[in-house]
Image (cartoon, rainbow over all chains, first blue to last red; front, side, top):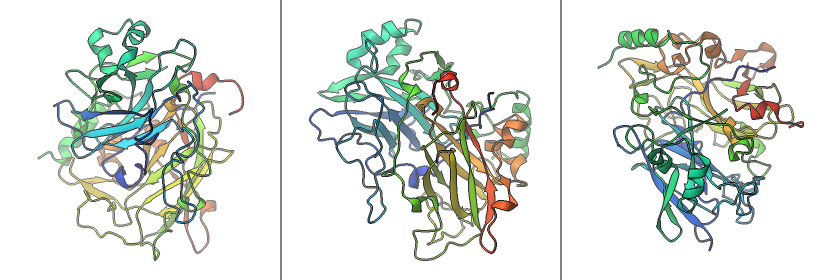
Length: 191
Length: 245
């Protein structure tokens, strides 16, 4: 038995008071000694920044475990407000809305290989007003460029490059998401 | 300025495609889609060990029992008609999605969002913000208490109005099952005019976005009951996974 799926609809422009949560951008604290920061812009087909996009990430921990942990939206039991993660458990889940200038930034740990020999990456879902059905892409850190090329040999090098976060300085990576046009990001369909 | 008549014609033209469950990302009647859809084909992935076949987990620290009632948390009662919306979250094999996060957000009874960028002339309600969360139970069931949202105007074209709807964000056991969608109310006369709903060109698929009024879910002297089940799409690996999830 397979049931027909419920169709997707756009996240619209007004998710901002509902979906973003305190600490959504800090899978680990930015001050964690091993933290990396991944940041970038979301651009539309005219090269304009997208100020109402939402970027979500899911990843393995440093040892490659995909078990995750609860607590991404930990509540204060007294006030019932979301107070962020406990700083101990690695939940693996990040959620960042873009700023008015289309920019987003995420603090996390570099993912480990999720199975022996696997190329680590951050799984990404992108939502936006104007996007009727969200998109999946991946963030590969630049040190894994060769492994990525071996994993996706059918993909042209310039397209593959859109999946690489480039190192701007120590522990700071840049990853832009281009929804359309020149340099369009590679998006995936899981079959 | 684009008229409703022109949008109607564009909806009729795009409707000839049909067959697909999900909206095409390139859907001209929804004008904001023009620059925000990829032109390259999606790259297929068949990998039973992909990171996307697992996903984030949520627990008792992430959601409180009060989060499912959108009429709470303010000094007074919100304006509008109190309703409940409940249903089950299933995967395509019909199995319940257990212990997963469901998030909703919506306009108030007058059709206005508690969002700085929604400035259309309808009143804000000091007793209604309009977002809630819950976790599905062992049957995949979720339930919210809220007020019925109003329809509202938007600027896709002249005299564009969105039918009343509640936004839903859902997680499956796999990140590849992630879903954001909208739930509509039965019999809304705005359905044929709305390019967002009409972006789903298959009638039976579109019907899946419309909740059912269920009289037995109404509470005497208190609330009207709607039921809406959600089936999460996902790769075939999520259909055949072993074990009872």
